[in-house]
Length: 398
Image (cartoon, rainbow, N blue to C red):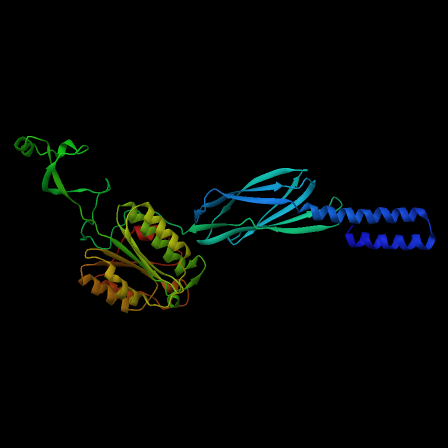
């Protein structure tokens, strides 16, 4: 029975009591009125004196992974709560967690939540909404608990097997995987021995002549820097959600960065959106990968500058013998001409072309791919529905 019905019943019995003068009806009116008051107070107190804590195992996750957190509800006012409904909300896609718990006079209840991450971005977890009722179910009171945390979801990456740089004649293009700072095949000089130097590097003739240990010094193998140019111009994008050129481009950029950084390369990135001009200088290591993934997690393809203009403006950051990889759905033939000019400066270039006609209404890229082949620019064509790892691992064409 609802509180309104009980209130109407109380009023009716009270009227009958006044009209008839029977003490039983007066007592019954008192009982019903007391019940309403106690129930209303009970439900109001049920959401008071509560504190919610949110503990994230980590504030970073990746598409395909999970966000693991622990919620702890504290009762700071001694009051029996037999029914509390908690609904935790947030901006993470498909995140809406409900739970019904009970608390004694005082106490703590905790539980863990694991939520899958389906899309990259910066998201908010919380606030939580509480609802409590009295034992009779007459009244329900609500309250919001602002226990809020942020989580950054990195874009997905795919494994790339055997993918090389866009051209085979790059300086340092065939670096071995046995570690960084490989030595060349020729000796550039001789120096004194330092603890930790390999015995096989000892120059015995120079040691005998100098009367102390001398070791051979080798040139460090040169390795080309890699620059990833991701097209974030809104006008050329096609598709929606996960099946869009924006998401495919971000996944490809993240996968290329992870692949080449794992190979010991220095990787940089350029992407120009409407509110963000992302220029990350080339560097190596896990910290560089995290930096790239953080930028890609929040990047939106809402820019206004064509990729050809961005190439012309930012390509001076690429040193001679660097490798430049452009990721774009643009069919504008101005950017292949720009890449051709970069090749004349000694910068090797390749293009990952997202076939726009498979993502939405757009012309075919067959003429563009033909132009790239004619200019001798290696390319990879990615269509909607392709397994990105398989297509990229197949290597460059042209």
